Length: 389
Image (tube, rainbow, N blue to C red):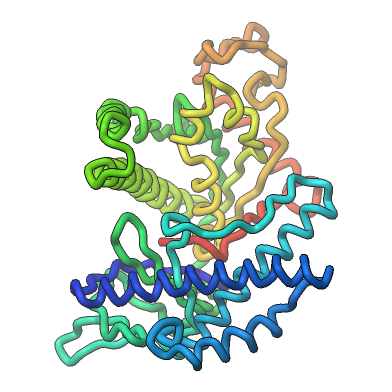
């Protein structure tokens, strides 16, 4: 399996300038390659392949050792492959009848990463004092916050050097050996109902409150946005205000991710089977009244983290059809209609009185046990290769 470990880099002023220059040269090459593809099609009516572009820019790199020649060869190849993938995705959307979205030229605010093949232009190193550094060609050994070790048996396949809010990160993409569960956990199943009132409600009456990270910071965010709008357009002070806004959004995202990591870790450690809804979030994200709360809750990120943690812990995640899970009584099965404002389930048939979300979680668990994967249920298979932790 594949995982991505993200580490903060601490470059010196000189190293940060060198990284900025490499990022700038990478962006210029990307835009030049895009322009070459457009001009070739306009002149000949045919596209140009990745292989032909690599020959052209390889020679250009050799002829300009002080500019684009500072880029690593494999990094340049990854850059051209990135553009090739953008065109492949464009033509796929055209054939599917979707909104195509032609690849666009990258401004300085839209190009934030450089890719490397590990071992070619970059290397993880440690000194005798146990301090870790990340070597980058034409930059040097950059001090890094090595907050978690590389698992034994893992191989680093790919590296992305990324700039986020003027801070540099190294994202190491690892190929990990398959996890062998030496001590299987006891059979213990739970149903999970996700929502906006309670972030999670479990079938065993446990509930995780929704911290509402974004809403708690809205007042501060409004002040910063008002400051930015009142400052002279394009001025240094306006750029500083926008940078402060970006840092606040990054802090909110980090708080959300940290909380979801802890919640999902608890679930996979305590339960062997976790049943959740196969719920499309489009209806919440497109609703004027629910969209902000839906994005603030980060339910999509929760599902992604839950899936890969369950795989490592030997737990099973099963998705069920969410139809009527909130309206059906978990005691007798009768349909008890209620609006979203009603938070307590009261069944007039069997007299069951229960929290609305806990009642839904019980129904979710019941559906998962009645229809496990292979007998009508569905095991969730979200993409996990891009998980960053």
